[in-house]
Image (cartoon, rainbow, N blue to C red; front, side, top):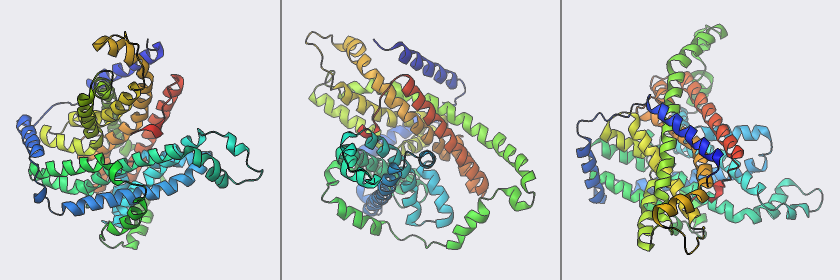
Length: 490
């Protein structure tokens, strides 16, 4: 049977989500959403690959941004992992990974402009924080006995290179491969802020109603993700790493004076620029908090909690699609394909599509977040269920699900759901750039009004909120004795 503490925690989250539903706008405002949905489906099943201008260039640049950004993040993350025992490094990693890639892109675009460096750093910086944390966890979980046998005085780097890294190598490779998949998703959505990746062409085609082009772009993206293990061969990796920086494109030249002005003028709070001094900081911060930060935090939390429970519900319903205890070879293959589509679709991209069809509300965001994160957790729990051996006389159907499988996978399910909690919060904040009044909405508005000082305050608040949720999730995992290993993600 399920542990009572896990059940009580689950019910608590469900109650919170139900309360949040009372404050959420989940309406559909378009006149006939089913017609738009039909057009989208028709475009998806009749893709027009030849109609997309520079499709090959878009794919190459999506790959180039992802590979270059992730490669830089791997190097930085490795050295951060070696120093992760220091509190300042842990805080740094938590801060940089708490800020979404699109927020980093918006920051760099202000002083680097539409230069490839903006996109590469937008991926590399938050991913470095993630790699530093996860690499440190993987290395710490390796067998410490070989390290104890080293001669006295052996340096930390040498000890890791000759003991912990060889033992942890399969987990490190598996997790790095998974993060490259995440990098491809991040690279694609960078197109929504103007960089020349697949998202740029997707937004243009959808805005003009060219659904066959949208279908072609989505299919290309899914194929790119689904065939990752086929084209990402170890012997080809050096070639990719050498070629990727030269395939990013040129972009506009960097005006270095803009970089200096951004840090010395643009992000300096308005009272300090206008001569009001520190005495004016109180009223200025109060106005930002009351009119922007607090409404943004409220809507971010409301949407996050609804999406979190929706994600869990979808995962519990969908994991049998790939479990050998509930489906055969054909059904399992179809279920695997469906979950690959679910987890491969970036939340931002899916929310953008649904917003065009349903109108501005929280509903597209909830559905997008649940589908993507639910697909990831379903995949993980489905594979975990395949490791369970049942008796020959075990019950079947719903009884097997409720009494044989679910109690055995519920702990890992909660662990992975809590692990995704902070990620859902990050995505919820950034979805505000699509018009939903989460924190990202106010960040985007501040940047549009060239109020970078306000934007930086709101981004800092977003990061602190994400750090707080991550700390709460880790506390709950420890309290419930839930063990999750991020390195085993797909």
